[in-house]
Amino acid sequence: MYTLYRLNADELDEGFLQSLKALFKGQIIEIAVSGADDASEDETTYLLRDPTNRMRLLQALENARRGDLVSVDLNDAQS
Image (tube, rainbow, N blue to C red; front, side, top):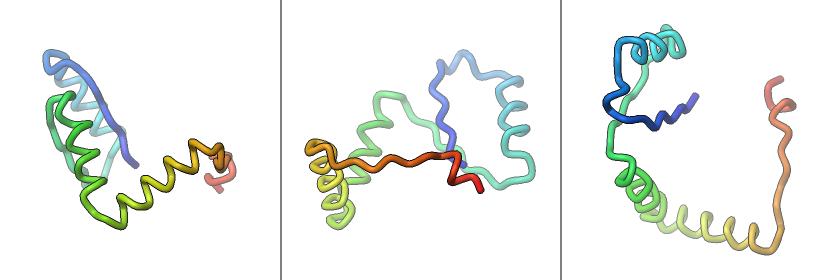
């Protein structure tokens, strides 16, 4: 499971930590912290760094521009 939280650092409290513990109970988790403005730039840079990944992402954008999209019913994926 991947969950992204975007919040003000002043909102971090014991309740937030308890909700994380409940959501990921018994699992090994990884926590990365960055400023919100920096995070999106870093993710984009990371994804575009690999030439194969870059080609796939650019092809996906071109497919979307042409309207060549695939619909997925997430309810079907849960079985």
